[in-house]
Image (cartoon, rainbow, N blue to C red; front, side):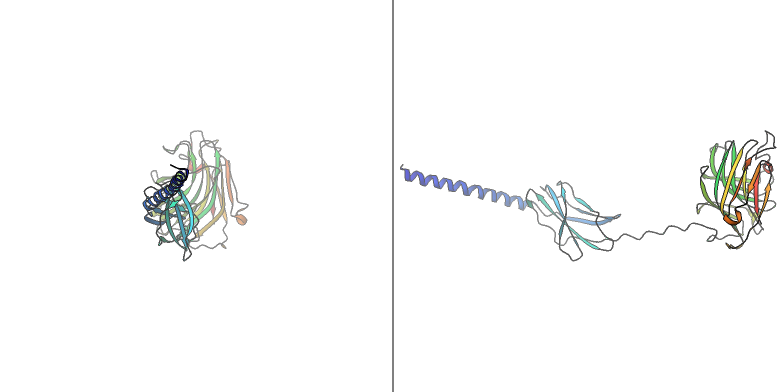
Length: 342
């Protein structure tokens, strides 16, 4: 074979080698693109303050390109989701009241699938927040008699309390906060909000209700409201926590009080009532109330000097003058400082 023939053969082989790989690669790419199907769209839904867009897995995909358009605008790439098994994306950059469309392409290497040109539509709107329930106050709560105040209790010894009270000569309702080392289980040694419903002063004429646990040296806004029919409602920070009925308070003239007491000799109390508001049949912030002190223990003192200007009264002291065997159960009329409003 001469040199000229060899050269022709070599040129033919070289041309074949150059053409065949291009043809083969092109064929492989065509097969790959054809097998990567457009993901089927599932949903676009609001989740709190985001939109969650989901689709179905595309076989053979390495990941997905997520697209979004706002209103009638054009599609814009929003994110790349890596991983063929991942089928959702959370869009956090959304504005309430706008209309969004979402679609997705699958990809593998440099190749991408076709896509749903319509997309999933959502009119994204965050529901308006529900207004907080109005707190009960002396102004907006129906009652015949009401007393409300910010109450702070501290003390030392085996027991002490601070109470809001509504009374007749023979019956009463009180609501306040109390610490008692000897309270019945499971309230023993705890600071509790407590209701005392005195149907009469006779033995067995009192009912006690421990409402919830509180804390000393912390200020709570308490309110005691008595309706004309003797229904008594107790509130903590504007929320109703207990309702009881005392028929002996129905259709009666009630006297409103604040009270600070300690349990036994040597125990002390510091009961501070501030922002006191009072209602007898009708409420007016301009009503001028006076005070009258019932100090049943010589160790107790009441400071009413700030009542007119600030609605503040402090009752504090250490129990004196009773025997070591007496306490606020057996000698309840000897352990208190009481301010009655007139």
